[in-house]
Image 1 (cartoon, rainbow, N blue to C red):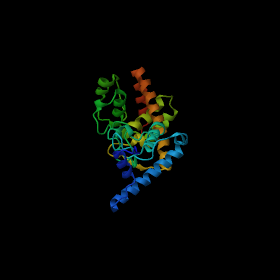
Image 2 (tube, rainbow, N blue to C red):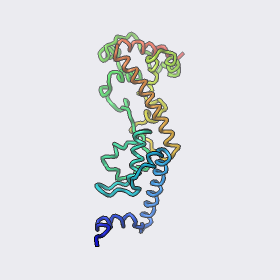
Image 3 (cartoon, rainbow, N blue to C red):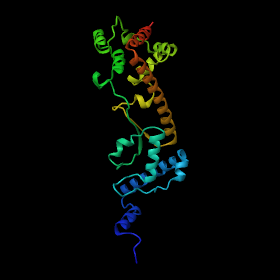
Image 4 (tube, rainbow, N blue to C red):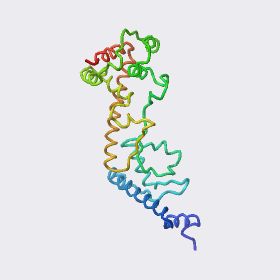
Length: 254
């Protein structure tokens, strides 16, 4: 009589049915079970068509490598990554998700100019850093950007609220200066842009969190698009740095 399972398969199956024997193991088992229920419930709610069509197992796949998530959970995580917002799945993939993705991590998406050298940025971002940093002589602007300046308003004399209003009435993409500066300064009030390596945030899996982070990701994409439009506009004609500086200078504190 041919056995239904091989010896190794039988051991794997029995391992899935094993009952925790210690208090710590019991707590760990219940936490994993609770997290799995949450992820699968969110899967069914957010992606009902994919959930209905899925034939993936809800048990962790022990073949190839140890993975703490079941194939069905991994389907959900990939869908979140592809359709809602990035969850750093590519960061974790090298470790084969040996640890459960118990929280949503908001990873930084921009270089932090407070921690990096000026040469690590492209010319456009160097210009924005010059405005915000004000630690560079005017001669350096000529050397780096090829523009000759008579005056740049010191940042401590700038009224950022006034600059925001001026930018709202300025023609586009010139008026995107405020948004571009906010991105570099991590002051957009968008968590995906303002996040830094020293202040990463973690969120529990829930509908409220997914909805909020999805809307914040849409905002981030809109802001990056504005910044990209302004960058391309400048790249087409370097003299366009001058109206940006003029707009900046107009926002002097009254």
